[in-house]
Amino acid sequence: MKKAEISDYATALEFLYGLQIFGANFGLETPLRMAALLGNPQEQLRFIHVAGTNGKGSTCAMLESIYHAAGLRVGLFTSPHLVSFRERIQVNRQLIPESEIVRLVKAIRAANENNQVTLFEFATVMALKYFAEQKCDLVIWETGLGGRLDATNIVTPLASVITNIAFDHEQWLGNTLAKIATEKAGIIKPGVPVVTATAEAEALEIIQKTAHEKNAPLTLVAKNKIESQVAGTITSSMLGDHQKLNAALALATVAVLNDVITVNAEAIRVGLANVNWAGRLQLIQKPNGQKILLDGAHNLAGATALCAALKQDFPAVRPLIIFGALGDKNWSGICNLLAPLADKISTVPVASDRTTDPNALAEAFRSANPKAVVSVKTNLSEALKACKDEPFVVITGSLYLIGEALESLGISPTATDERGLNEWTASKKAR
Image (cartoon, rainbow, N blue to C red; front, side, top):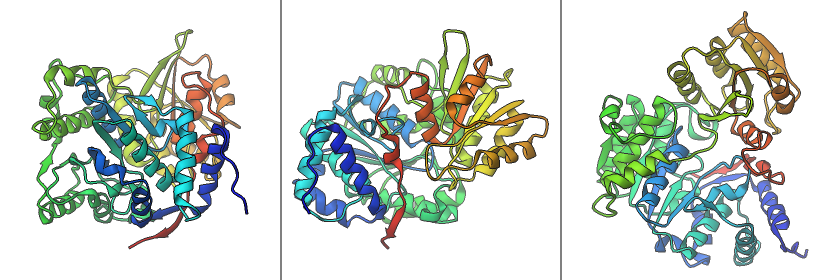
């Protein structure tokens, strides 16, 4: 059968959507094969590889901002995207142009011929080729899921960063912290420095053991040292104590690599002061004075961090909460954490086949806080209209919902049905 022609951005997206039928393939054989077809662009680049349960994106954004402020040309690869697929591949925080997506999709599809490849594997090698062509001095390289068998793990970085270990994606990574840590620690390479803020003893033991076995120098960023590491004139523009920990982790990574890439104190100060990462404790003030806080707290650890941030940064506020979640998350546990913080709660569906029924979310909230006024809305637009006179609104849960909110609020340009590219299911798991 003749291949569909890729002539513009819309047809390139159509091709990428077509890759979703292959789900998520955990293993390195395919990305290694595809990278070789493209001349192994990863060998022309330097990386900081970042894994962990929460805080990966924020830590990547901080590292990118610091090294960009230091004058480097910095590639940034992250996932999922909030609105546009182009968010996943950036150079100096400029999204990859649509025309480059078209060119790369055509070239990589031709090189790969008819071999099976997943969307994430394709996006990974696309990023490698683009960053090499752009002659990036450094690439901040975020894992997709886990680490050991993640497509991003075909690189040998300057440093491996593991933010933390918590429960998420248990169906793929394991149902204990030790199992999850084993997958995340799979990014540790022989002799390559490791930096982590993992505090859970069960998980930290795995990371320490792996680093020792691979003779990889390990730096542990302890919570009791955060204030001394992120203090004085060095402050982050991001809200929340957990972002101080992410900032301390980024600073420790910069320090570990200072002999390889020297960064002065001014670049660190400017980088942290100007870091931007959408949808993570992102505060928006509308012209009518209403404040809306967007936070993709999609697992228990993320919800715990959101609760702590609200209590610290907005102690006198009882926000209205708009919440939507995917069904494969511990949404009942998240509801239990958030419910005591609000007197008014609206539940909404997420634009995904995996959405949790908002009626089930509402019941969970009512059970956790019988005094709260809990309403079910048919969609986010209805929820936003209903709360237009509320002084403070928190939109949280799935990152899909955060992306929809960014579009609805006019913060992000509207994309053409690109959030659906985040959808995937596991097809097979290599071992």
